[in-house]
Image (cartoon, rainbow, N blue to C red; front, side, top):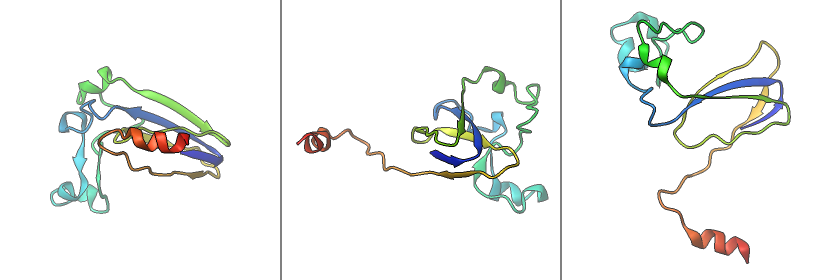
Length: 119
């Protein structure tokens, strides 16, 4: 992910962190919308029951123990986001232009690809 203009703050969690469970407030928006009108325009899966600006660690105590990484990107900065890592992104109220390139991550390392590049 590369910033062209502006600024973005990222928080990252490992795919094995357990963040994608109901104990962390994780929801499937389309399912929630069937019984909770607050999610009628929502889609996807995310921590929809959590106030990201003020996490209720009494209701969701697991958030206190989560390991996380933070990165602030400004114009000219790039960051590699590992496959399937969970993330939260926030930017100030200003112009923000960035580019995100998705790469296919093969299930098995192929040495031949590196060998071909070395020739």
